[in-house]
Image (tube, rainbow, N blue to C red; front, side, top):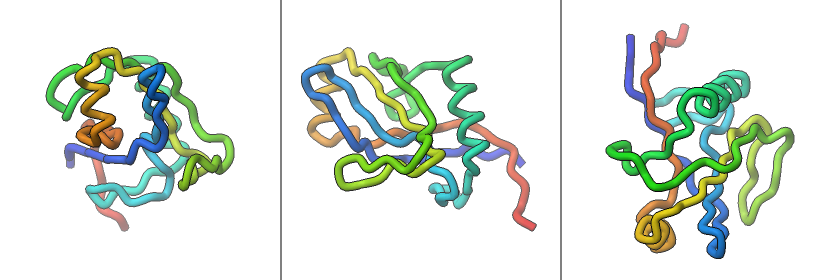
Length: 126
């Protein structure tokens, strides 16, 4: 069965001077909004496919955003950041926001998380 997947993860760190946002895109062994859990291996595969084929940032899953991914990596260990931890195996991304209005909206809290959207074939848990 194919389902649409959405996962919102808070933006953890921002560099105001350079208009950079950072956060976890997917975290392993954590239940998402659809009740799905992803392994570290699945997350790494998704992160690599995104960088190889897509590299696009959207706004509200509706339109392209004037922003680009500038760093994308899999956390090799648990990494403490501010008052949270990037869990080992998490997909971490830094995004440069080029549009001033979009940056202002992110700073105001209108955009406060990364959200991965897509489609997947899922099977019931056995």
